[in-house]
Image (tube, rainbow, N blue to C red; front, side, top):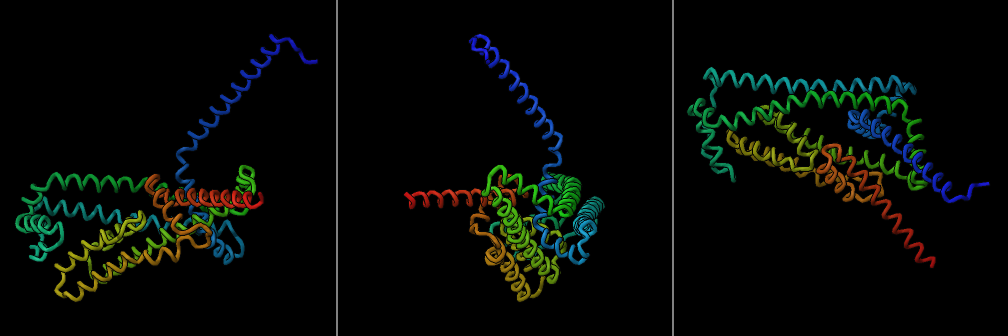
Amino acid sequence: MPDTNPATAKKQILDISVEVAIRLAVIGLLVVWCFKIFAPFVLPMMWGIIIAVALAPLFSKLTALLRGKRGIAATLFTLAAIVLIVIPTFQIGDSVVRSSIDLADRAEAGTLSVPAPKESVRDWPVIGNQVYEAWETASANMSTAIERYRPQLRAAGAWAFGKIGGLAGAILTTIISLVIAGFMLTYAEGGEKKVRSIVGRVGGHTGENIVGITTATIRSVAQGVLGVALIQAAAAGLGMFVAGVPAFGIWTIFVLILAVIQLPPVLVLLPVALWYFTATDSTLVAVVFLVWCIIVSASDTFLKPMFLGRGLDTPMPVILIGAIGGLMLHGIIGLFVGAVVLAIGYELFKAWMEREAGSEVAA
């Protein structure tokens, strides 16, 4: 028979409250502690999930070729991806460093020379006169030009070497992400069941649908944003290679970066095309190169509708807005996170509206 004494009941409630508070504090401390331990791996883990989801169809084909040997397929996939990413990145970085050191040595020795600019440089829009003056000063006396623009050159050099230094960290993160993606692809079937079970327990039937929406959105963004960016960069690099543009590989990387962050590649290609008018003797070739640059820059207007939103009921503008907004908020990984979150929000809102409409009809 429970004790009905008010003082005793109050003490029991207090004891239970203290016990619950202590348990919650211990659980909260454990959660925070676990998160801090895991925090350095959050970004590689997210990239690993994105890579695994985006490349799962390709991995399935590779597994089929190897007669279902998922472990061997995952190992080959991981090693091939690391080689394809790390080696070109290292070569580009090494080339930039060597070129910078060579330029610095030639400038110090007084053997660095620049050809005089053509008068047509003055006709470049907005920056024509400034570029012509700086170019003319450099061609007449390199030492004077270096001394005159020393603060700007020093700032540009510090920025460039800072980026190159940060490249090592980015490469390490990429390698870790690829290894994580390889493990996830190896155990993809069991992992997908567990994820669906967890999400389904939280959100019921709607939660299970969220897994499908997330998977389709990641693949859609990979094709519609990164895929289109790679196509534009490859087309731009091919055009610059055929035209004989110096250091075309570096300009191609800049085009890729602009395309990924959803800025028009013409910001890089137009100055290159204008410079090409002064570097070639054939006006026709320069005009063809300019037209090619414009076509490459504008190609996303018809490529994005072809790839972005494929396999999704969510409208393409929702995915694109989510990708751009996520990019602005979270950086490159926000391309995927933003698109997934906005797509899920849109689908939940649509389901809620349909339920409300159904309730009104029933009433």
